[in-house]
Length: 313
Ligand code: AMP
Ligand code: MG
Image 1: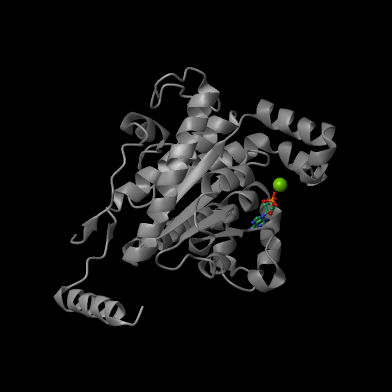
Image 2: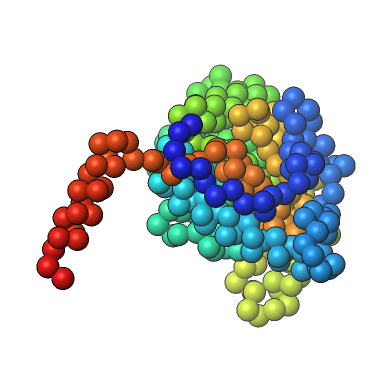
């Protein structure tokens, strides 16, 4: 690729860490044997920092700066969009992660779409439709706070929801439906990647114990009461069913063009730093460069300079 090379920084997650977090396509996600609590105090070993919390903070600041400049390059090179799909159980930290990881990025270059229970209007369309409409345009970063994956997660855990979805009879049949949806998702993401949207899918992996602690914190602290909904408690009783639905979905949809990353979520600082590091890693692979002006454009720039300089001061 021609153009001005982007200033490469050496703030990177170690390759072994990225590999460890990746669900290798064709292998099972193995959520049951993945840690929810790793802090990786030794990812980058910045001088003088020994506490996991400090290391994570240090790394997050560095990754945030990287992302901010990466977004400018994304915009200037006008070829790629970045779609970040964030999935997790309640209280795993999706909102906080978006806030802390993206806070350095120019708001003009970034948009967050949150997907709740679909409206009647949305249900009148196929399950990808509402997400398609929210995709980022070239040059931008789009974040999906939940996504079309809910249609193989919450709907899988609560198949009774299918009754309101107006599906044709053949598609409404149990196992076939989920297999077909995985296929549709894989094909959709391949289409996106081929057409210039890089897809980064991150599952924040929180333990049942830590979810309980965070719910209690929401109940105990008046300033956090608003975050608690009694529906969250009802969903918690399906915790194991969700793990199973995630296990199957991640296994079936981690592909060479759009792999899943599983990020331990019990320690918020470590989680945010890891998410920042993954995004920097993926953007780094795009090899973005500032567009360099061709000979005609160079001449136009010189002419503009001459015109400005010859103006009366
Ligand atoms: P929150 O993100 O905590 O505000 O909650 C949004 C809720 O909407 C979650 O309980 C999701 O499971 C639910 N939701 C999101 N997408 C869908 C969908 N396609 N079908 C059913 N429920 C959904
Ligand atoms: Mg919630």
